[in-house]
Length: 176
Image (cartoon, rainbow, N blue to C red; front, side):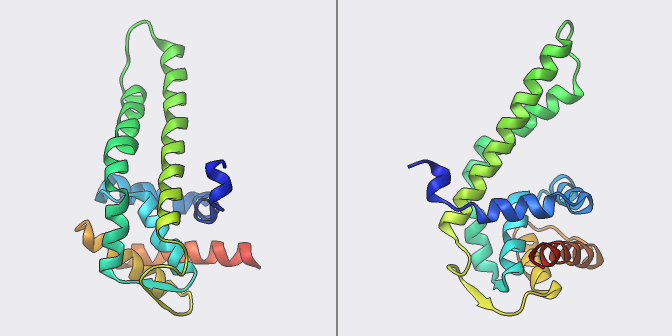
């Protein structure tokens, strides 16, 4: 059985939906670059929040730990190489370097998809430590704050609220 047949990829589909919003994508990358967040974990806690699941800090810590080695040994090295090839010039390589960078970018995206499948299979919607409530901006913010506390990132509350509001509106519009 193919990997995609075993997993419905609900989380991946959620991520594609919300990340297609330029402001959401920009904020995700800002959380990654400025505060060291794992975008997949950010999206994961938001996915659960959109389903009305408020995750406690211990649960979010378990989620982060479940993918830590994959992130450190697979995703980040691919990202590092891709960024190196984008910012550095190597004599006589031109188009060949760009082709390589694009292949690495595709591999990085595939590694992130696999990480999301890992998270979804270990912690499916409704199957983890969470309190069920109505999906609100406050629920999404609470989940995101739980993660940001774990990585010791202090992000302004207004930034988080605007970001979570945008994510929730995007999901609500798609469901309508």
